[in-house]
Image (cartoon, helix red, strand yellow):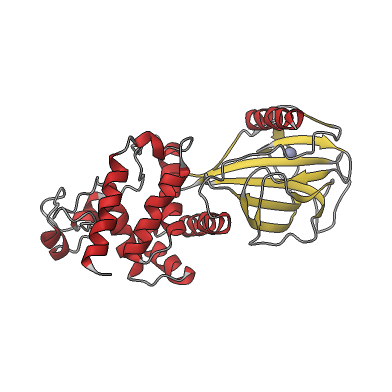
Length: 329
Ligand SMILES: [Zn+2]
């Protein structure tokens, strides 16, 4: 790219970042945020939806981990100082591009002010983009780059899956949720998270059971990437979906699947995943050992491990929201 074009693009970016940071927050304009990533794609060759997915992934992790400071601005990516300046750099706060380069740091000057500032959003995005582009810019190349950067297979998968959703819908605004059962069907549920379960050894009940008749449709609770579809001796026929907030939504004991659904699909909130059944507690096909219900679980990845959390309050909220929407129509 010629220097003039790069400079004018940088000028737009700087103006954009001088606007109040609230415009980049989740509730405000996701469009502005997207524009920032698109501009960085032009500079580094890394697709905007990949840069946006990395940012989203790190934002999620900072919210889930009390030991990590939250970065609230337009870019949440936090590059560790020793990686930025170089592990042997005597000055971990180094901002001089030449000495950072000399000590093997990855920090780069993206906004052309002569400094590689680990707290400047444009420098951060440019650094990540330049780092990844060295591995190439296809999906497979980028996954290798992500692996080198994060050294964790779950991180690589989650970022790739968020990127695929951003690419498919051409937006980062994919936060909508939906109650997993159509409201016109009969169903009942209460808070049972943490109850003891006997079958297969003592286990804690990691989810909410929604009791409903055989064949009741089971709907996606979010925009999500289908990470798992198949049999498990506890859960029976089940589906696992990842949303853009690092949450994994688990639907168990299904009587059957939506026939079109396959692993790797991207679904919308309210889309049919399958049907309520009573499968599980045995080898593939086992059913009828308990009354039909949907077992719905929620799990979050925090950058190190995956943990279960209580879906009950979320179900209540989504049910209410879905109700309000229906009455408005
Ligand atoms: Zn259950």
